[in-house]
Amino acid sequence: MLKLKVIISFLLFAAVSLFIIAAGKKDRDDIYKTTPLEFKIPKGWPKPTVDFFKKNKLTEEGFLLGKKIFYDSRLSKDGEVSCAGCHQPFGAFATFDHDLSHGVSNSFTTRNAPALMNLAWMIDFHWDGGVNHLEIQPLGPLTAPNEMGITLDSALMILKADSAYYRMFNNAFGNPAITSQRMLKALAQFTGSLITSNSKYDRVMNGLDTFSNFEKKGYVHFKNNCASCHKEPLFTDNSFRNNGMLLNRFKDIGRQRITALSSDSLKFKVPSLRNIQLTFPYMHDGSIFSVPQVIDHYIAKTNAPQIGLDSVLRKPIVLNKLQKNELIYFLYTLTDTVFTKNKRFAPDGPVYFKH
Amino acid sequence: MYKDNFLIIWVVVVGLTVVMFEADAQSKAADFTLRFKNTANGNSLVLLDSTYKNTFGESYQVTKLKYYISNIHLTGKQSNYKSKEVFLLNAAGSDSATFQLKPGIYTELRFMLGVDSILNCSGAQDGALDPLNGMFWTWNSGYVYFKMEGYSTSSTADLQRIEHHIGGYRGINKADRQIELTLKEPIVIKDGDTKAIFIQVDLDKYWQGKSDIKIAENALIMFPGELAKKSADNFSGMFSIISIK
Image 1 (cartoon, rainbow over the protein chains, first blue to last red):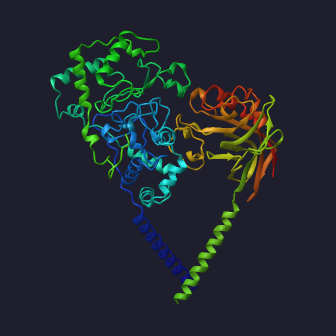
Image 2: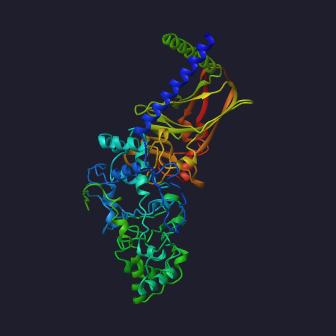
Image 3: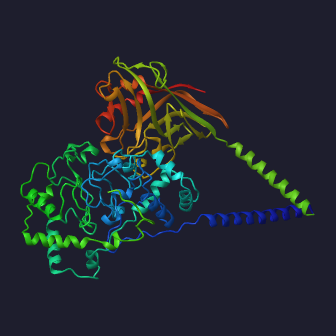
């Protein structure tokens, strides 16, 4: 009889335990459920070299949190500079019409803000490649005194003072803890999702459109003169090169500052040419204002190579006035207004851009 | 009847729990601690208020001293402990690394002063590696492995500062260093022991070891490269065992 009682007790205990476990699980599911997002590689594009979303799973909740942080100007010393202050959606996430970007209290940086696009295909970040991972990139602009000028502690305090953030961190990560790691991972989910792949060039490549005669000729000039560094379909090969820009007034030595190698003097990252129509002025210090002037720069440098100039630029580029225009027409087919006007990447409400 | 059953259930549950805990206690690992004692001129390091002299006669004060200890490795003939855990030691904060060690006899102790290169390029980290700890370079990614700041009348830098931020994980600029400590006798760990190794971290040896680091010449070392590597070469000489308790 006792034996039977024990067995019954065990069964009862097991049943109750299972019920409690099941109920508990259901409760948790109700509170924390993320919506997975698929990272879509555009047709014909290579796989990213680094899988930034392997350990930072893309979710709708993480993306929306990242977007809110990206557009939040409170995360700066004077409360006026957000990430978007220098990375403006209408400028393909570069600073529209500015040579150097502005930081807090009307300060200037010493470089031209790079466009945030197709970052998931990058390996190193910044003009000098000093930053080795998408997630930690924001630490630079956030803390630099001439950019957002805030400490990481203060940034987290600002997030913690806003109940909306508690909700969003909870939605994205399962509990409301607001940590630097989570903030950075959420930002990476947003910035890494900024994919531009809907330009006329892309439509033509996918057989949905055709180049005009002018553009077609320009494409040939591009392939003959530019494509080795500005490699399709991303229009960059992610390398660092000396393209003939001289040491500027800020004594910016580029990649050498990171590697401490004199052979890296004045090397800067090859930027993508996508949305080039919107990302003027050009070069690491924004010192060349227009596309025709950039082309003239390369014609001049390749025809009279100076010491240190990259080896691929030692073959003279020869283009007459008409051919230059053809090349420009082709480059303008890289403009992607589906990207710049994408509501998904736009702020939820009105945002004040200081510049 | 129900009451009876519940009583039995609880007796069984409590009984099982007790048995399980007992079983657990049988193989209970020891709480093992590496406790770091920073010294200068033979005395415990006092931040801010004390002035010390290095072997070149340069006097200095220390305002900040932090360093990473990781990849702790304890081995014996039949025992082996290897951990990837990273600890941040701070003269104004935690002075110890505590972990669980299985019973056994250990004859060798080594660890890394620094952070595994892979962790330097794996994105946003938390815990000891949270950039909030002020040990991550924002403009040239990577961790500062050893950070000493202070002042010296020999410093030619602004405000006579000393800022030695030693790090570097890429290729030739790697600045992490293995520290091997000689154990005079084996460490015997028994069930449920609590043991600590007290380790001296001698700043005198930082200034002069394999390399000479003179404040007058190098008050500021703030990025990976030759200077940082020279400093790092002195790390191994700084550590020695004081006692095991």
